[in-house]
Image (cartoon, rainbow over all chains, first blue to last red; front, side, top):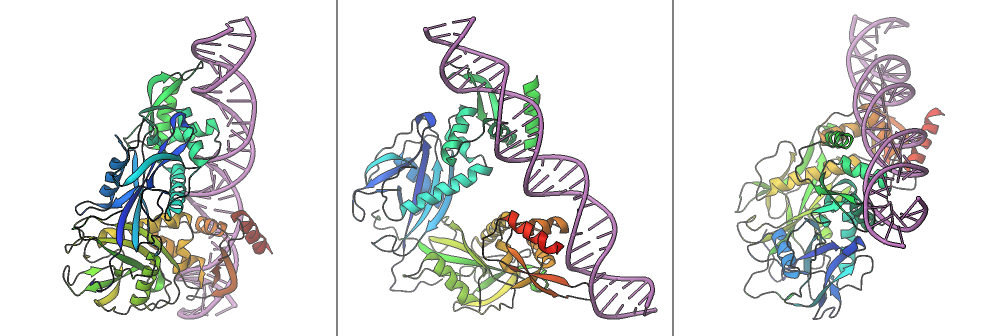
Length: 236
Length: 236
DNA sequence: AATAATAGTGTCGGCATAACACTAATGCAA
DNA sequence: TTGCATTAGTGTTATGCCGACACTATTATT
């Protein structure tokens, strides 16, 4: 474990990819900061910073998140991957532990951090040229998110407290970039047993109102039991 | 990106979990080194070391592997997770990027590294008390390996060049720790389309000899096509 | 009353999976 | 040579999941 003398230790940063959805579920957006200094001055980058002495890597990611946005509640946070190729930062050896965070759509406004000249949302599907290897990191994050959407409930937290099944479907279609069948989607998503109807409904236009659902945090019920329950409720 | 003065940078190590199978497919084994120095002197630990200036994280993991074992061919190497809780190393802030490696069973002998008093194989299911948070890291590695065995071909490389389907099944049962149905296993595994019969067979005892298979690296064929091909071959 | 727009529902066919039992091949012993 | 012990190797059936597919329900406006 003894470190050789004469070789400077690598720097370690934690970068946090902050994702949310645009109003009207039209876009998946990522928060980027404009670099004020060389290298890559003027380019956009994933917000990040050094790990403080007393904090864990995840705490560092949360702190970044709080520094960049006035985020009230965080839907999801997960370590993505650690990038450490030599040469990814021209200044020297920098190893970056990347996290990705999902925050609900409800009016998150970015505020410029201390050392970032500017901060704003970009579409994940229309990105500017990024600093360092951050383009590759975003690709990796999107791939991970898509994979997890297929078999977990990660995506649910991107919406607010209450949402309609149509909204949830739009979200999935937006991120997966493909159309989903309405009936199959509803069947599959309800079979997960993590969604419960609030009883209330919402009208979005001059149409039939849509029932509202809530994400059920208790994981007490199996999918099968949940479906049974759902069917029973429906037939009542 | 400017680093505050006065806070020493964290140290970064790469730890490599080296897994193999015991002779006779009786055990999943991990290579551990005995620590000669405090802290945790005398305890066993995952081999690891610092990242050298010019090398990537993965190259560091490969170097570790070469230093600890006379490994000829490496079946699989993947970044596992980065552990960086403060306090995981009593000497100060150490962030560890963990990799796990799978090496074929064929007579890999550990040789004691420079700063390790001793090195030997342990059963993953009967581990000694480990240094640092290494017990937790091994748990995490086993969980990842199990998950990936379910839907990828990771495990194939743990066997030698040629192997029987019974051996492969034993390997799966060993790692997943549950019995599998022979017919279902063979159907599923062949449907992956990555296994081809070598035409040769091997006798293990006083029994019917078993056909040998080889891992087909070309990923040219779809599972369905592979199954068709298999069936056609069989019926000939 | 008709219209426009979205919400909400059921069936059927194909495919993957799990459960399940017998025959085939080999060397050895009687 | 026959039987035995042991492992290799094979097919069918029932069930559940998933994809494809079209019509009715509800609302406000005209």
